[in-house]
Image 1: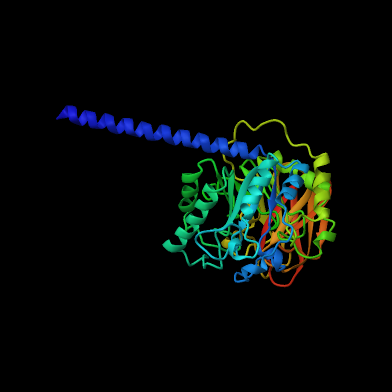
Image 2: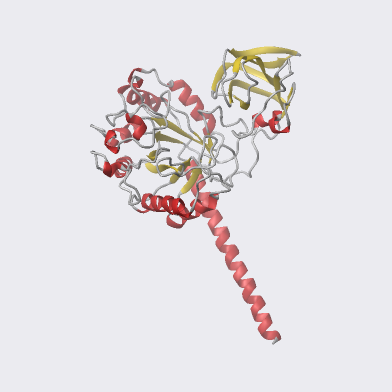
Length: 453
């Protein structure tokens, strides 16, 4: 009897060891996929879908599929432009929040097959970019208004719908390096992680392509909800100066994500700004995903083609490979924050440095000073500030640094909005401050980030 018990104990021990080895091997493969992705450094984000044809950044979810009507779509042109810029991969919007799919999906009639165009654009995209030697990733919106998938409406039926669509994308188009997911626990909407746990879709994706990274726009730096953190560069976020979290930063070359008439005449984000931002984030375990938007013909405008070529003429991506990821460390780990007041514990001052768009600072309504101060613990040199508020209540504000006991003004503006950037000559100081000079309603500030390009 004792011998049987001993054998059972050994069996359990061996089984535990086996599971431990499998877990370690899986973690090593995950780490390798993350490192390989970060080493790509520079990619093209492509926003092209129903919104392109209606001048809508978030398209109405019940447009006639036949209103999606490219006349000269050329994914090879997109791929050649990406390569000319020195990019190494791309991510394409297979389905945005309105729910229109750019492939012939078996689970919905609201897709490319119901348009007059008919052809599978996802197929055209992956083939064209691979032909140029570029890796391919796909964007997929969980929030889907056409099919009723949103916060408060998650059930087995629409979970199966999402899984079937993801299965199609991950089985019909070869190796996909990443699925960039939006509208899932995001500031702007989509199901919460309580109603749709991260593992529900992440495990499904990895069951089909184990090395495909899940990059979720969850608007915070937790790796419990994504494998790569996304810094929302159009929402007042920026990779912090001390970031060591595997990340991606995604600005736009044009004014907005999707193309609109008149963009063919825009001056676009400058070469200098792209290169400075790219170089900064690449040194901080962060990949740079620059969005470009094809026009309603299905082509990149000439000004975009020229700008990407100009970028490629000067870009110099790091040649040294990342060999190891540092231990996780929260951003701004050595920075302390104080403010003239805090409306409540919910709106505490430290919220502006946590890279979390769900947490914010709000001063008390009776506060006549209205400042927030960042103390970096030792002198740090910066030449750029990025900040943003939840609404558009700030009427004027200023940025200062404490130099020799006096506050030196670095920047000021009449409004802030969700995404404000200002550059200034190099300044070295331990303490920096933002003061709200005038406002409509008491503003709610989400982020304040200082960097040096």
